[in-house]
Amino acid sequence: MKVALTLSNYLAKRYSINLVLLLIGLLSIVYLFDTVELIRRASKHNDIPIALVLQMGLLKLPDVGQTLFPFAVLFSAMYTFWQLTRRYELIVIRASGFSVWQFLLPMAIIGILFGVLQMAVINPVGAVFISKFEDMERTYLKRQKNQIAVFEEGLWLRQPVLIEASSIDNTDNNDGGNTDRIQKENLIEGYVVVRAQRIEQPEWVLKNVTVFYFTRDNDFLQRVDAKSATLEKDYWHLKNVTIHKSRAPLQLNTNYMLPTTLTIRDIQDSFSSPESMSFWKLPAYIRTLEQTGFDATRLKIYYQNLLSQPLMFCAMILLAATVSMRPPRMRGTFTIIASGVFLGFIIFFLSSFLQAMGSSQQIPVFLAAWSPALISFLLGLSVMMNIEDG
Image (cartoon, rainbow, N blue to C red; front, side, top):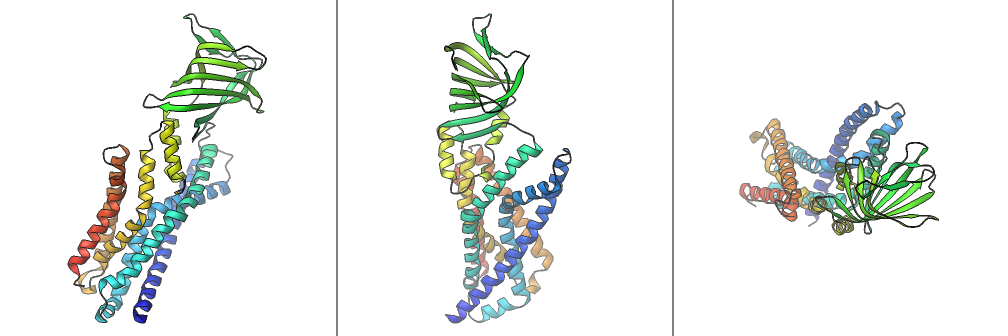
């Protein structure tokens, strides 16, 4: 028992060191390329200092690192097995009566623990960082002023708008309806906050809409209530409108036009970053999206994929063992490296393909998220059982 514990500690320590060193190397390379790309994008603007670009690169790093983790687990395991094989340590271990499962177990446990760490700690920290990065990207690189958020109370968005200084004039149309007509003179900068209780898709019709008008100095001007709103080119089309102004009677309009620079793609993109959501907050956010009317399939797949990471990392170690534990005379270094790259490519392609099918609702969410980990684990397990006698 003492010998087995000592051996397990040695293998776990060796693998952990290789994993950390490989992660540092990969993240350094990724940070270099990301920073160069950010500098290229920032060069279009003259007011972005280099320190800000370097900070944005660091904020993006944890999110990119999570994509690299399965490959880091795979290649570090391959390198560890290669080291042990080249030094004939595995031959000595097996000659001492230890089975392959006994010296695979400590490395598999490290992989599982690393998967749990990524899911429970690294992902929430990375979500905070990538959220900050996206805010800075919208502010400094994309120069976007629109802000969109979804809560249990519904959809909220904030957008800039030009407001007539003295009043907002709404007059009847010739066809009997009413539209918003903002006089071109004496316009001041302001903003509106739009709240919708629910969204009907795929038409993108907002239900039970309330619009709050504010000046740039946050002075409240008026409130507009509408039964529905449709996003059309360059404006929101509100129907069955009631206008509330201070010290003025209610105004009832059939139609009301609110100018906007938003498009449906802008709204979709604001919900296309599951990486900015913490693992612990994802279930509540998924329920909120579904209650509001948005499709949360992509977030469900992302959440289930995080849950599958411990199994995926364990599978990576099994697959690494299948290609790098043979005696030195039977496998060259180039063959091992090529086999690892091929395995990594196949797993990445399979994972991306199944997640895309799940996002388009062609296969169930559980199958899309867990299939890559399950297939990799069963494949590695079956190969090891066939090539090893104990």
